[in-house]
Image 1 (cartoon, rainbow, N blue to C red):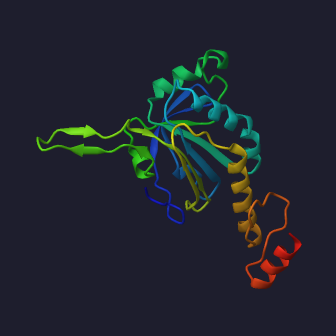
Image 2 (cartoon, rainbow, N blue to C red):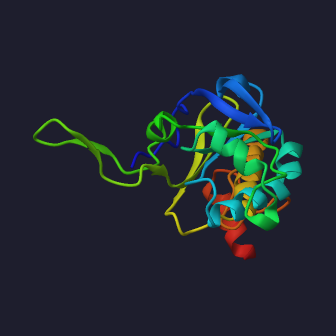
Image 3 (tube, one colour):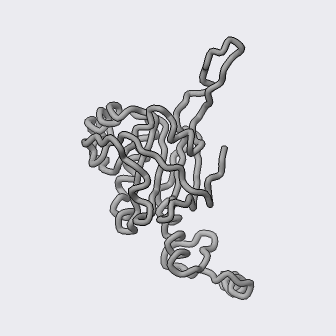
Length: 210
């Protein structure tokens, strides 16, 4: 699996659902470059079990992301019609009605492949028949992309393991603090905590207080 941290985030343009109901043809990452931090997260599949818990957890924190000038984007390998259908179903019936941030339809799996989070691969046998080696859905991956389009944080979980949305916000805060102040953020740092200048004396002084 590739480590994309420190590299340009792969650009994409794909169909997506926005505002919980509208299908757009060319939803692109490029539209946010130079303007916003982007949190792009992949989830395995519509109409499943852990996925709606994550999607609603991100929705509950959507204002916190927006207040930080962050664009929150979800992506799975399902079609836009599948996304739209799931968005019409109430939470009580296993649906995700009420989710308003964009959900990308990576139906040709190119976005998942470019971010190297596709669970499985295509291979060719001795008879030149193509076959898949896995379910060909996305892992639970998350990328924080800065305004310059550079990946600053990457997290990949296996399918059964849900993510912590507060940790994603903490990482956004750490990135923004570093961008604005030039300081680095120590272990378990949270917004408002003391950060560290990049010097041995600063680190020693910080550790002495712990």
